[in-house]
Image 1 (cartoon, one colour):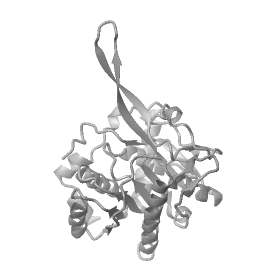
Image 2 (cartoon, helix red, strand yellow):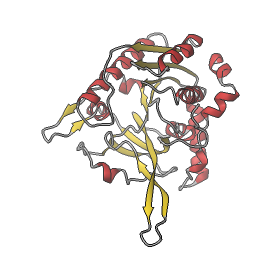
Image 3 (cartoon, helix red, strand yellow):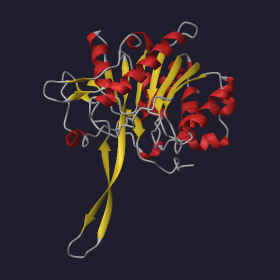
Length: 309
């Protein structure tokens, strides 16, 4: 981890911070801190591969890399597998600069000329992403031949607000899970107009983010986004058994996850099972357990530590 330690300079420290204090612990704080301490011990003995996909993320790239190194520093040893394709904003070149300085970064880059998918639920989008994630899976399998991997950590590399390190460590304190997934939060501005005064007030509305990947336990149906957006999970609550979830960050026990495949499919009712729901179904069919950890917060909204560079 020497190279990683050397790269965590003062600038990267600023970029890596997460506003833990914004999310209060609603359960026993002492017990929660004990779980974090236990997670620190387990993480320090574990080897991980951190992986993710990216395209055109130059505005958040330096923050993302700093957060990845901060996360890696929690573990015994770490490798990175990053898949980048078709970026036109300088992401490809900047990633190569990082990879040239650190042999622990395995960078996969391709120019496919593939169209850019908007945030839609059409089948083609998760089908395409599943193929990219399977490439990363194959790479991690090869890494394991020389570098024994205990856990795979999958992270969305375009998260503007980053992720909670305390929550990630809390995940390792629990037992009996094959996958521990995140509590994704986005804050949206709601404009409320007073017709009598003519004034407009702005309020922040908190949304549970990844409604497509989220499936309740024993329920593979695609849920209504408007309903799931209103779900609230709070720091300190115990992990919740789910059929599927992702929300920007997932921790997977290597042996439980490495032989599962990403894919997507359209159901008879026209709804689409995305790549995460498909992957988690494969895991469940093998007897694996998947949880959502309310404390492992991912933030899709910028904050005071995530000003764009």
